[in-house]
Image (cartoon, rainbow, N blue to C red):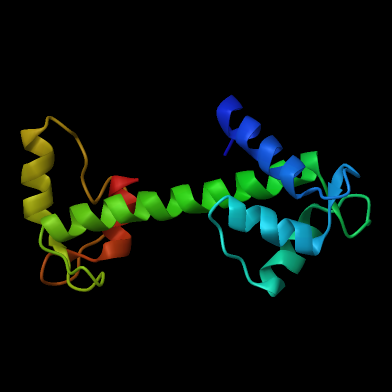
Length: 145
């Protein structure tokens, strides 16, 4: 997920702050401090994984362009979590469980979509309710996606 100019500016400020030796790169400890400064709290294993995923030159350090790739991946992951949260809230509002248990009755969903003038049917999307006419969370998520 692309970063905005404001996010890039914030990242640059954080990166420069934690590039203690002004080398233009951040090592493992500097990265950890930088991410904490941005509100993240990765483990050492996650930090090693982050570095290995973006360290294009094998320096075991992260340059600013590589750092931005980490932040973009983190943002995309958080956005996905937010999307699931919204879907879960809708699932619960229609009768499903907050723990993703239970289901939403296909007729209830069908009536709701008709009320809003939407043309979504489970058959069109190859989603089939169980014998009680309920769509589980994963099926509901496909329909809402």
